Image (cartoon, rainbow, N blue to C red; front, side, top):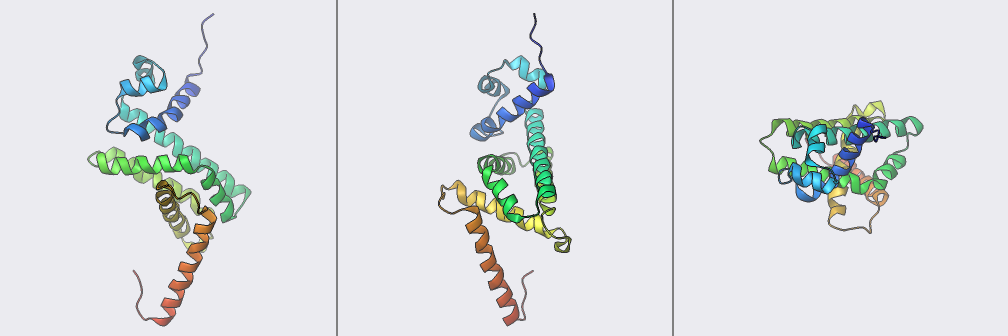
Length: 193
């Protein structure tokens, strides 16, 4: 009896397993042949699901970002605590670090590809939009952007191997920066733009 394959599920499996390969080899450097070998499938099978490496990469990023955004939306419906989103992010630190490294790789190595640059920009916008649900409407959409900036900064810090400082400790440090900023604003007529 022939094996019955759920093509959509198999496609998602290929997308999920492609992330570490793209991260370790680089988006520009890896070939479909290398991808198929690492994934343990024939090159023909990979081409059956994705006509080009760019199509595979784009599908992978869109799938991962939409899955993350959906999980963040779900979390925002269950809780409005910034600590909960921080724990969510910390729990998937390796995943988000890999996505960030890919974004940097695309910006550095493939800056001539408007489609991929747009994909990275749209991905950041999707995360920003999802994160905005955790901040009061009064932040006028700036809460998600500020948290995303913090989030990317922490990922860079943690990428150098500084495992001793927790996300919460780093976030608490922002309060001190905010206090300093507020005190400077009270004592000065100048402002930062």
